[in-house]
Length: 85
Image (cartoon, rainbow, N blue to C red; front, side):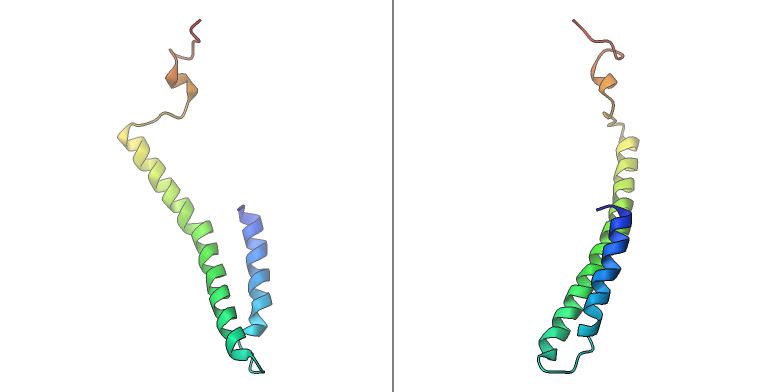
């Protein structure tokens, strides 16, 4: 999920669940619990997607580069970029 999409969808979904959380009418017990759980899941997944995963990816990339296991380019698989016939 891209950053602009996540930043647009998350607040809209949370604001739709907002009126359900403090509800006091009939059936409010079920709706309150559901709204709380879904809102918490949206906040948690947004945090994981936008903060934790990029940090984890960067950390793994740095560790991979330090260990010398760089096999990103196709040139490293051939002889200095020359194609053998």
